[in-house]
Length: 290
Image (cartoon, rainbow, N blue to C red; front, side):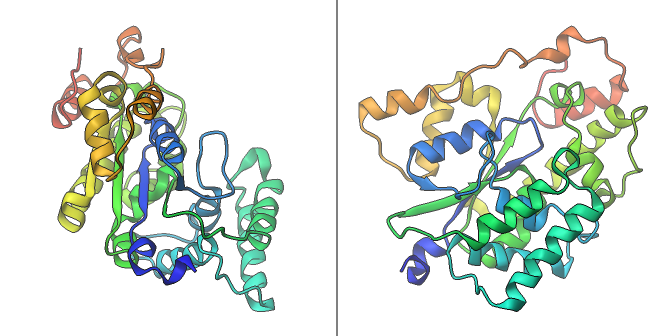
């Protein structure tokens, strides 16, 4: 069984970043390279088991919350199909589902999503043919330190996009869910763009610092704009994944990360966020402000 293969079991490839940063393109590459990335995915290729177990801001109030480690161990057991289907284990899952419903974490699918997640977990059976594995879920960047503790040989890919593209986008879910972890005020429609810029700065600074300190060469930062436009960056990613590709397959997978019309949208929008802070953050992460 795969769970007894020490090397593969402790070497997942995990992908994360802020929502809207381009993590889906990297997940699609993993999927095409025959990495097992989960059996309960949305169109963005998020691993929804991870979402269900760990995107719970009311229960995770700090970066060192013991709930993170408990949830990650449960996630590991689900991915590898050694989850114990006892009455106690099932009760735990339904308690998590109740939390999702009561806290209204997924507003458009308040009841459907958590119940579907439980059903998916209870009916999941892993197929041992998968030699490589990992998953993509943007929120994973919040838990790099605990992930490293559980998987000492973890490889982590942090995906970035121009900060102002995210500030002038519409995906502020992480800001609303996790502002408390970064000691930021509660966001609202009036301040969300300014807070998103600060959240970007603090979240990526933290992830890069922890990733470099704990993972070293097993940590890679990918700027989605570069991945879509530079063969050199794509080759670095393939090398990081330790995969060898035949020429025809290389050409096919190289087409996955494609330049999107929304890249650079900040140039078309009148800047309503502090220009000084905007310049500072762009410079910090080697992005152009103009």
